[in-house]
Image (tube, rainbow, N blue to C red; front, side, top):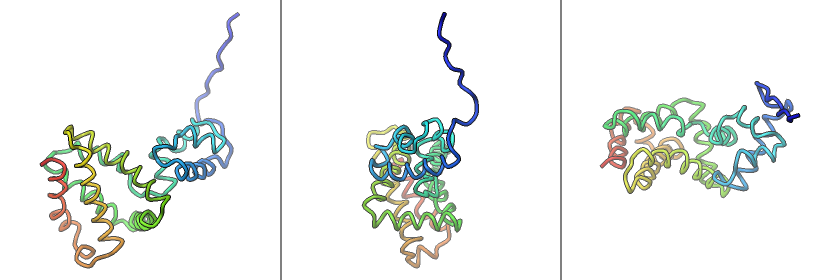
Length: 198
């Protein structure tokens, strides 16, 4: 007689009513101790005392869970590949506009400024954010370029965008803070375009 394998049921994997909160708490600890690259969905699930399938059920990918755990207001891993895949001569403008228009929304601006302020002064948050951006933004942009210095180009884009956000929304330096989105796209977009393709 052959042994029958248990039938896997459809629907949400088993977990207590507080499972989502325990997963987020475990993720905060695991990302803090291991960094973005070192933390895994499996290790976070083990720390939370749940099956890794439940982590995926609630949060999808590790990037989704990280964004939830630290409050990242944008999802460059989701949005940027579509921008880069668009018309090549518009990528710089579209990338700058995407970030600025997102930060013009009060909730995203509030959370984004909080995250930037925290990252600047924290030995824990800074490497976490850097790891996330390296893997989910810079790495994804670099893979689409297909040139030997792609990672440097993508990092230059990240430095331009983060500098723009810091100057406009955290330091609030008057000319940039007061400029319209269209004006900043017109002036900064070509620089981002040059970093990517020239």
